[in-house]
Image (cartoon, rainbow, N blue to C red; front, side, top):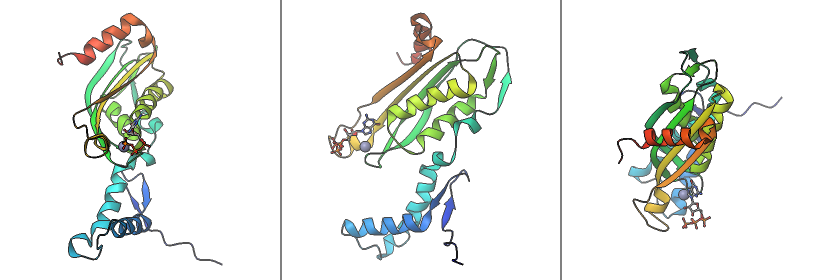
Length: 206
Ligand SMILES: Nc1nc2c(ncn2[C@@H]2O[C@H](COP(=O)(O)OP(=O)(O)OP(=O)(O)O)[C@@H](O)[C@H]2O)c(=O)[nH]1
Ligand SMILES: [Zn+2]
């Protein structure tokens, strides 16, 4: 009978996601060698382990799902727009594995039965999708679709504004440019409702 491989996985900061620590450390060591560094010099000795721990945290969304985050709901008999603005977002671009960061604004019109989720859950939902190798458009779409799927929201608007370090510190070298993506679902596609949401969303920024 063969022995199962040694478990070298590390739980993420949330405890939900496990990464293969030994493999991540070996890959970081290889990368340091590939760029001409000496992974055995004092300053780099602990780096592979640090990067592996950082990865468990940066990619912790891979061990989470929207259904769990949105499982707590309560009736407050409010069937009009609820909007949380300026939710800080940190993600990792899947093309270069460099950060992109900015803010998300999320608005939704609850299900007809008036059940809503806690405000913090909207911020947690963003992290479920942001803490993975990602592109900005996909986070935006996934957040919007999750609110429709798991809360039966009658309308959703999600706007993400972010700066991509792969465009700032390398490549095209354009620091300060911000990418804005949006996803709109259900009743918020209606021009009047959408205009109300947009004015709340942009309030204080004019
Ligand atoms: N649509 C989209 N593109 C992204 C995102 N993050 C990074 N990118 C882009 O992905 C593209 C990858 O282009 P490639 O030509 O394959 O890679 P590259 O040679 O490194 O491109 P440059 O960044 O232009 O040097 C770049 O244009 C990036 O700006 C994102 O979230 N959404
Ligand atoms: Zn990139």
